[in-house]
Amino acid sequence: MQSPPPQTESQPPTEADIAAFREQMGRPPRGLRAIAHRCPCGNPDVVETAPRLEDGTPFPTTYYLTCPRAASAIGTLESEGVMREMNERLAADPDLAAAYRRAHEDYLARRDAIEVLEGFPSAGGMPDRVKCLHVLVGHSLVAGPGVNPLGDEALAMLPEWWRKGPCVSAGARPTAGADAAEAAEVTASTEADGTDEPAGESEPAGRVGETREDR
Image (cartoon, rainbow, N blue to C red; front, side):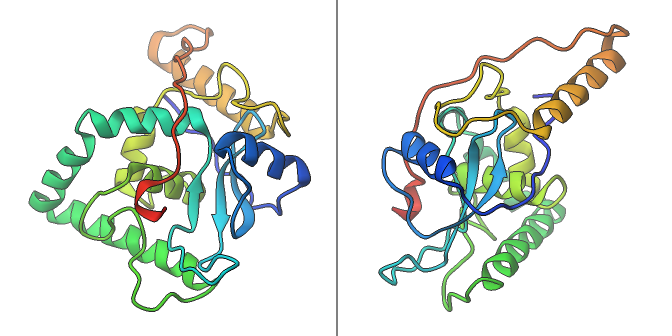
């Protein structure tokens, strides 16, 4: 995509958000603390999850991607070998490895601000490997550009999953992010070809289930 969705403020979940989550994931939320990022369509696409679930089970994935279109498109990247290529670069590029470690430290700091999970890594394979792009993209959506370099890269490879409207009907409402994303796209298109026409839409993908490493 030309421009990623803008950051959105963390918000307490509404009843409509919880209904949207249930439709997206096919189950009720567990340990839900906040809507950490809201899709331009209005639905949640990343939720903030408590470091321990209601039954006390540790859950290190603080930022959990919920949008089935985004998740399916990320699954396609994983199946195409993007994680393998990223791991090879991490092993060969000290600057990239250092930036990725800083992303790991940012993730830990955000989780520790809620509750410290002694002895648990951050998530997604950080700081040394890439094991789950869903986690890295979720982190990039919440933290914004420049925090997680590999999350940013994966996000840039995705189609604009919101362009055909909400992935589920419950709770969807257009956000200011939709206008910002559209404006950024028009600007980028104008700079690229000298026209005022927005870039063409990308085809969103289908559905995927939970993050695999934390089920």
